[in-house]
Image (tube, rainbow, N blue to C red; front, side):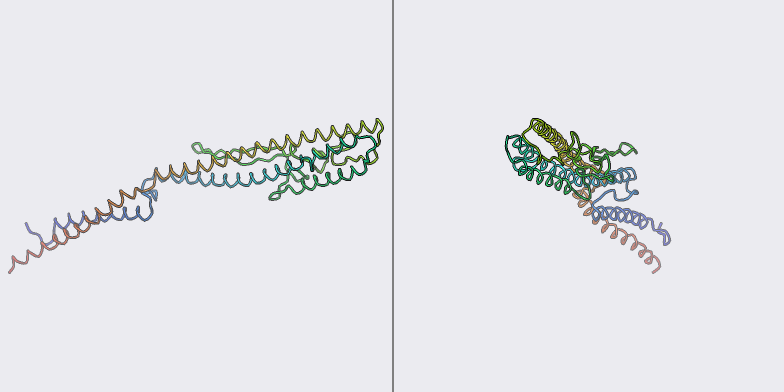
Length: 301
């Protein structure tokens, strides 16, 4: 029958149009955001996973920044240690050669001491200058921590986060300390490397023995400082490797998040075109259905 109050055809057309409009709104949101899961209501499970992974990536970014700071600090201390080891022109290597030269009979040891003093001051200045961001492991005070942990990694298994670090003992690199217990200021045999003075030494067997002791002290210091530099060199390599790994891991996490929530723009563009056509057809169908009620007027002419 024909009813003025109930238009079934219009109702069906309206429901279809509402459905198409809703799908069109969803597609437009995906296109504008680039994500098929942008809110928890889109897909609660995927949204939750993606949110947690983004938080992990933020933590990894902080680790990457920390590794950069640690690399700069270690490089500063490493550079200073290699400078203290020196070569034929300065540092402990030059100091050792001067002391060997001082064993020559009849040589003017006071003039050699002038060079020795300059080298001692130069090494102390190098250690004092080995500071980055207020951190100095070579010339320490009572405020310097005994151990340092350099953040190197972050991981989360389930709900348990784990932060990895590279532990360093500052005493292994300290050349000078406030308690004179560093590699170059520890006193043994009446002197430290920092206080060696050969001005008053002569060619006597006793003074020659003293010189031998000084040479042995400097040789031991070279070995200790070289060992400390080698250790920091290994730490530098580890930090560099960790930095590359963390950056690669961040990229991997980003790709994983993309697989979960990113929209396929090829698919969405095709869907948008189809839904726009369906919407136009739905409007036309609704218009036709609404126009059918006009035919009732012909019954009363």
